Length: 287
Image (cartoon, rainbow, N blue to C red; front, side):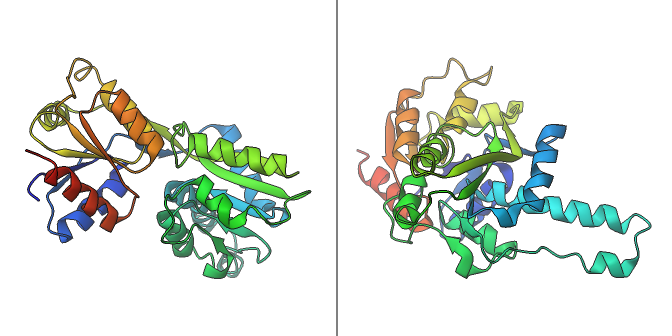
């Protein structure tokens, strides 16, 4: 396999995936098409703080992505740092710890989000996520794991990003999951722990994108939002993507890539072995 993979995830995630692909002997380059930032609106910050205080009141807390996890738990770190810089007694500060209510189930649509929960100190015994062999890592697959539980009268918290796209892992899937809970008698609260926005690509990145539309590179899309952010760039609005190739990690993302004009789009689960197999499938089909 000789063609490079263009990884379009947010910068940190993209770097992780590029490293994985390079370690697998593949060519890969990052072109982040979504920017991630901590929420800054006072109402969002207050909602996060309130969620921390009342977390034990929820039956379950569902995170749409690893970014949702990391920014949610980072609020604790910021609070502790602020206290350390104040006149609070050191003993009082040292007693502060992330207290994970043992009654709360933490829900993840895929292995990346589950890994982020583990890294933040959530016990594995409190995490529900689709099995490793699930056909997709999305809200529908998560519901197959948790849907038969008695949800009536229970409170559920969904932690997302402001500006989440309507794709399999966040927007449409999240709304579908919310509807299932409400149909089963649950109260659902939604908060944002981070915000997503389109990046302003540099001249070099624009040049990379134009080249990758024609040179056989394979775009790796894990969000339909990334597709829109790419094609909406001022320097790329007139690019013909018919000769471009892509791997899409969900059927809804695949449809968005095809609608944007990509000539070849191969579906894949968002797991390294599946992506490697999808790349092989694309290359084996070439004349």
